[in-house]
Figure 1: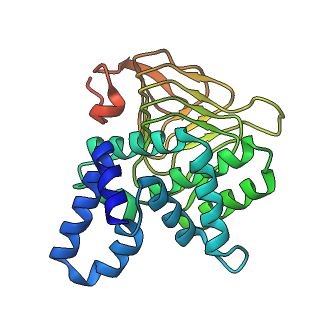
Figure 2 (figure 1 turned 30 degrees about the vertical axis):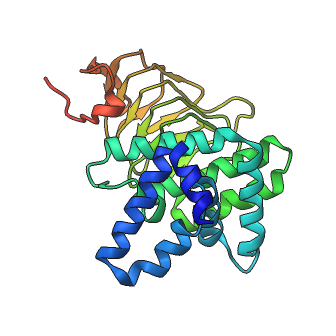
Length: 267
């Protein structure tokens, strides 16, 4: 196992860094040793570690940890995109969240990151016509993490769900790459209509805490949605919207608002 891990980590600098941070954590806090070994150091790859965390967090009387782990490992084995997205999401959290000091922390402690990786397993199940199991995963993610993402929703890479509590993302929502959203965000519908009824969020968008984006509308790339806003109409690219209902109040203020995370609206 040690030889395999050494070989893998030479090819995967993200996993190498995580393993190094895990070792440092045990040295500083020996009482964490069992948890950190079980979650990280017992596994040869990031994908296997994520499968373990997925299963250990979502297991219940209804579905055993072993079954869930087998499902997650099957998904990661057959879909390389899951691992690539997990690395991009991890880098996004580390780069954008000032509370994140290591790559290890989101895997062990940050429910936004963990919920997003669990959603990705559910989405894989949905796209492989295993909808009942996908719904089960959605339910458990909602119960455990307080994040409700429909398994048919499409989420890009490099997404950060900061704090993540009470985030709701509907069935036909699409979220682009490098998007940041804070807690209590809703990407929802406006009634009982069927079909394509949820927002389409462009690349590089930042959505502030408590914002509600409703209906089959488009939020243009690199835009900002101010905290507490209710967005009911399309948002132009590279703009800032605020209010109830939200209106354009200026430009985005920078090229990459989801990375700068600047939520101040200047007069």
